[in-house]
Length: 251
Image 1 (cartoon, rainbow, N blue to C red):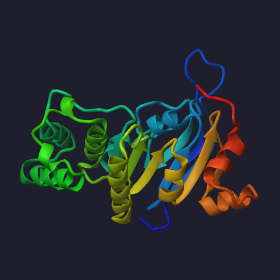
Image 2 (image 1 turned 180 degrees about the horizontal axis):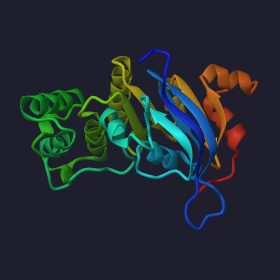
Image 3 (image 1 turned 135 degrees about the horizontal axis):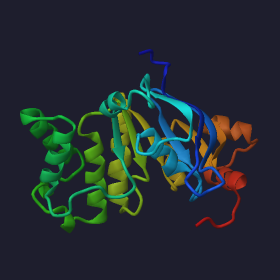
Image 4 (image 1 turned 90 degrees about the vertical axis):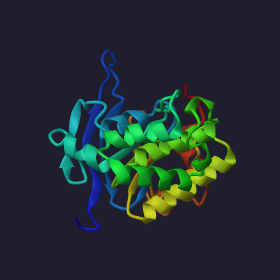
């Protein structure tokens, strides 16, 4: 695959939830370039999580065409699942199992076995500062430790494309720093990252390209410099975000 190809190509994506007249995603067309850290930003209810869930194959779109890593989401989902990692906003861990046991379960689901699985678990626990807690039940972990372990689960099979929905929400400063620095390393090693967050300063530092979504529509996209130019602004991303989406509270 060419280095300039799109990792993800979205055309006219629309999603209606049953009983709602207004679409959650409204005719979105978007390309995400291979090797980027792409930030999908927006207020509460803007459509971020819906879009991530569709791209991961967890929701069926109402309309539109999507290719991921060259595969059609509609007809080649099994192939797509081999090359993507998913880290949901909700902690998806077995609370009664230890860190090591959780990773053994999820690694097995991804097809890792024997020494390959053991080595991968050891490597990732060390990298994320959890090696001393490998045999501790996850229910006894702090919020930051759970977030780090949740991220490791999505990385066990070394995915080409990684989806992250609010990966640093509610964590301490030290855990957030470990997560952000690790994401930079993962990206440098070749993984394309699609990332949602409410932390705009974090996104401004981390992301190489961005899109702001509101009411299911993309209202601006590009690199940070391109977005600033398009909106005739030299302000911080947070100021541009408020300018485009308004200051009304979203629940």
